[in-house]
Length: 105
Image (cartoon, rainbow, N blue to C red; front, side):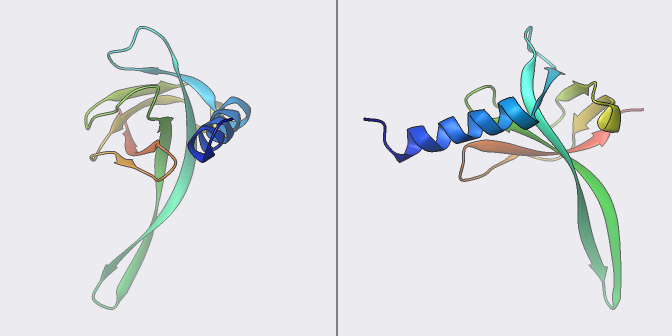
């Protein structure tokens, strides 16, 4: 009987299958399944607060290990284009890498 980690992985796989999309990742011959989302980040400088829109790419840790500087090519209309992983990816408790990305000009 599968335990909790197996159930969590199955739920993560189902979410990526339903809401994810295929993307080309630098250094990989096959496409990977990713989830892309926009996210607001607040920066504070003294009494001034700035809100800026950022893009985050989520990728399952059992599919690949991303690195800063990797290029991701996405074809979804809302986020179509080439994106560079701009900071060290962080892994969440579900085994998903959270990659902050910037568009490549």
